[in-house]
Amino acid sequence: MPSVLDVHGRKISYRLRAGAAPTLVFFPGYASDMEGAKALALDAFAERRGLSMLRFDYSGTGSSEGDFEQGTLAVWLEESLASVDALTDGPLMLVGSSMGGWIALQVALTRSERVAAVVGIAAAPDFTEWGFPDHLKQRLASGETLRRASPYGGEQVTTAGFWASGQSLRLLDKDVEIECPVRLVHGDCDTDVPLDVAFRTMRALRSDDVQLKVIKGGGHRLSEPHEIEAILRTVADLLEPAP
Image 1 (cartoon, rainbow, N blue to C red):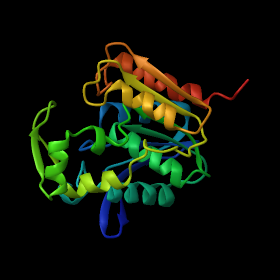
Image 2: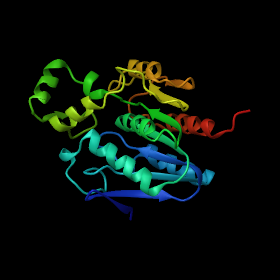
Image 3: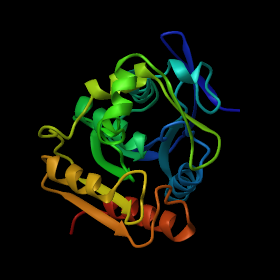
Image 4: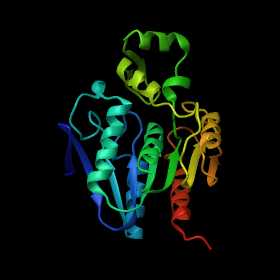
């Protein structure tokens, strides 16, 4: 069973692996959780390397309590920061998938003194802006909740509160003051987060040490064995000391 952290009354489920620094921290995507293929592969990687790792579920997702439709980007960022602060010590390597990549970048900005590196997997900063046509943004701005069929099955829900929160935390319209190494892994067939978003993110980051790895034929999930292996190689390369 996962452990639980109380964040302002919200019960956040987490799993913490003890080990050496840096602590790997995994941030799931929108409506995803800490038991996905990429999170589990990263945890197994941490076990093999003897590294500490933290993974958790945002409120209303996975094994955490709460109502998903009450979640906003700001709420989940607050939970992410609280989890990092309460459960880890020392340097961090942040790994975020899709929306989790957006949150990882926000955490890197807020905890810059601790973050040694960031890895974005199909990272989706600012998707509340570029991910919705104007007519849907108008409906969200008016307070409507959007319910659409998800390409992965089930229903995709976007609340007005989540959308407004995301709009207030946009990054790509300015210089992103992150100085640490950043690695972006993106599929060239990603129809959810266009490859151009990865290039925009790379250009916006202040760091001089930013690399984009494009996976031929890769979609948004990047959960095929060879895609996960590419992600793990990216993390491993960041762990190697400079010659």
